[in-house]
Image (cartoon, rainbow, N blue to C red; front, side, top):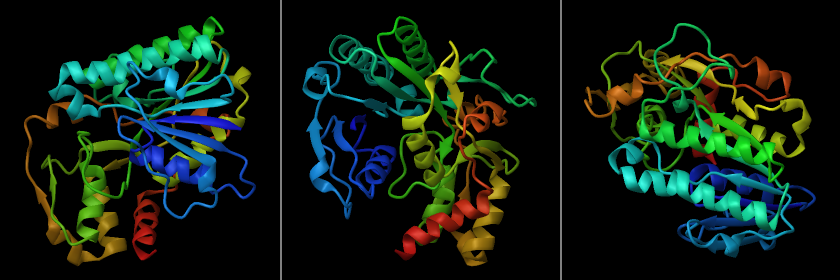
Length: 317
């Protein structure tokens, strides 16, 4: 099976590429692309099955698209705070590059399975009700706006049989290894990652009751693999799924850090209101209905303690 992964130098792209290239039977030939040449994840079983290509998708799509593709995973993007800070770059990367890519797929590999990584940031407001896919998205950020525009493109190109698309709206993925990202929700990884590495994390809100929708990298990768075998006919005309997540507050996360990592880790947390980040955080709902995704065979995390344990296990490796 031939698979194209965009945004492959990023965390999700690398984690998914590792899963594909660690397949016992070596069934996947993987084309990894990003604005910089992405690396082949270290220690995979089948490194010869990967090809790495540096490409600006606004102009270089013919370099990465071929008629033999079986599936395309679209992960590239400028995250929430980055898209808000640089309007033009956000639209170029998040919208223009995606439009150029699916246009090239339409011409070169018509009908190919496309999995598009969207976000819960297409919704807005601190609703008390659990949102499902029937709720009309009304984004209040540049990032959310760019993502919902791409969702409409994926649905329209699918309706016209140009591609066979699926939109998967990601929760915040935590705990991510490495350095903080430009996402407003980046501290949701930092609140665990930094203390566990002896570093300070600045939490951009002093409201410990602030709640958010999250999932672990492990569950996300499992569900991305599930998309390869999912019967698209079950999705109907609206090809959008809210990826399963769990709702946690800042206090919940601090409590999990203390239970799993130890109370000594709490000294690395500093809570400080950030007037630029806080409005973005509070523009996102925090409760979602997982029913559609679960009925289609997607998986959900059991709780935040286990998410922290998963991260600690990566440190022990």
